Length: 311
Image (tube, rainbow, N blue to C red):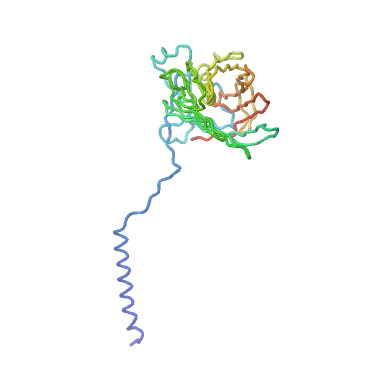
């Protein structure tokens, strides 16, 4: 007989009982904890305002194409630059002289250089453009070390006349806004400046960049060199006609690669006007790939396309 066997058997019985109790508790407990992904996004439905010809050239090999966001999760195969949709008869009657092709939802990144306060600054920028075929949002953010981040946001609707902004905000150290009160035919400003009459096709300083691209994409043959496009453009303090002149086509070498572009220029007409130079890429659904703004005092900001997110 083993004298150590007597205490061993009771200990074994206790261990078996404890293990059985734990198994019962685990079977009765709740299932595994599931956490929702806080970064999950929802794809947006994309459509165009009119049946426009496809972009004349594909983006060069180094460049990622601008993709229209599909309604279902993106399939492995490549998507077209623009999803075309037939325009209705009512839309033809509403805009007999103009047609539009709105680019699909996209996120563009830029390298930014700026001259301010007699110094040269380097920074970065991001333009987020998204829509569901009826409503849109554009968000532009530019930042540089030691300078306040500048953020512009435009929201509104997509109509037979292209983009129809409802609100435009511009934030540096503080935020100001412009409100498009279409039922009253005016633009009002949070800065308490006098209201401005609202003209047909009016845009704000952010939406105008995308409206120009949608307008030219809808009828590329109509806007050759020397053509002019007049659009009432609102800041957060006033709304005035901006006249853009179409320049010759340019082949640019940008941080994101070589790209064929069409340049448009808005020259100052008054003492304190801003000069705007805009380059649109036909092979990327006419999105802005370069934007250069020059102040009356000579300060300037130049943002150049560096990459594209395929949302």
